[in-house]
Image 1 (cartoon, helix red, strand yellow):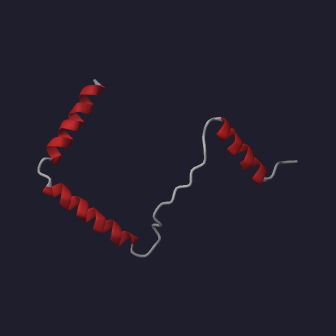
Image 2: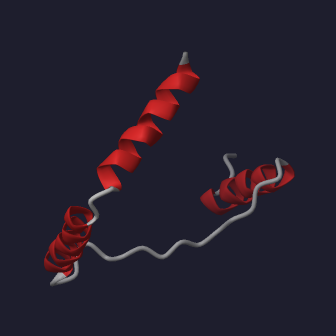
Image 3: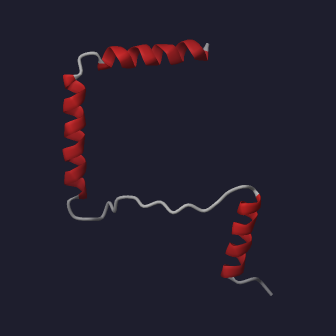
Amino acid sequence: MSSSVRERVRKHREALRRAGMRPVQIWVPDTRQPGFRDECRRQSAIVAEADRADAGLMDFLDAAFADLDDRAE
């Protein structure tokens, strides 16, 4: 007779724990909520404006990417 779903889940979780894992609950924004899209746009606009106002940001990013390219060779 096959084991119940509950038993299979229990065994799977026990195996993960033996492997050194632990369960973690993560709460994330509900993308279905009214206003979610507008809030994303609002925050994106704030970040974009901050990026435009930071004259040295692109130089910093270019230097960081160049450093990564140097390490890959």
